[in-house]
Image (spheres, rainbow, N blue to C red):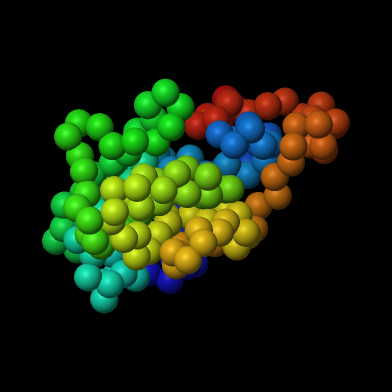
Length: 191
């Protein structure tokens, strides 16, 4: 799939939305990517994850790790495409951690996957968890990088199926707020 084909699929499923949104990072944005609008379709999820897997097929991945929630679906499908196991992290007392008996071996080669990245904070936390187990994060596969290339994962290379340059604003600097544009509920079209 080309980047334009990925974008067309996200537009077709209304995963790319326009309005005034409060992002998980606390920032405001005129664009929101509702991943579950596309991920609710197993055939699209499988196709997108095969593309992420193809980007890292030569990296000898042993395990795919994604953060809860959307990252679970991606990890599962990318792991299936690569023929590896798939596990996930979740928040425990505000920090990413493995639970449910998940662990990594020292030196295990790991691909971290995530659905949407704005600041990259959650991915960085997952990378830290992977490293704390003695495993080696060899790449980060993303469905959408909406950071405009600003997300930085240190020495871990990353690839996104779709790169978007989307403006984000601190609430106090948001022109949408200053113009009294109503906040659109995340995951809703405002209807």
